[in-house]
Length: 138
Image (cartoon, rainbow, N blue to C red):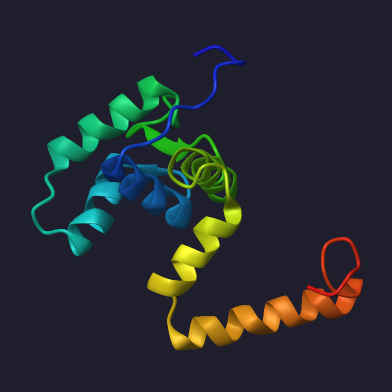
């Protein structure tokens, strides 16, 4: 993969494996499979191994071939990939509006406890810069 080529967006199945690698760090295919199998008993070792190999080919994973078994690691940090995916989602689904994304999330996908936490964060940010982004009241 060329250095200037952006990392492709992972599929849902690839995100499951990336999540495991972000949590565990560099791991061999057996460890990734065992972690996934605890969540999804229908998972098979052969499928996980093949998926890891394909993800390496796509540039989503690095592979340490200096040891056996080979170890896989995510190429991008979790936060960086999430930011990239979110930017793409906002552009494609919400016409570039972060506000539309946030309002949809607040209406449909936020628990009461999460809402309280979000309100605290927003209040602390408002108090630190005098209100809105330009210093005016929100």
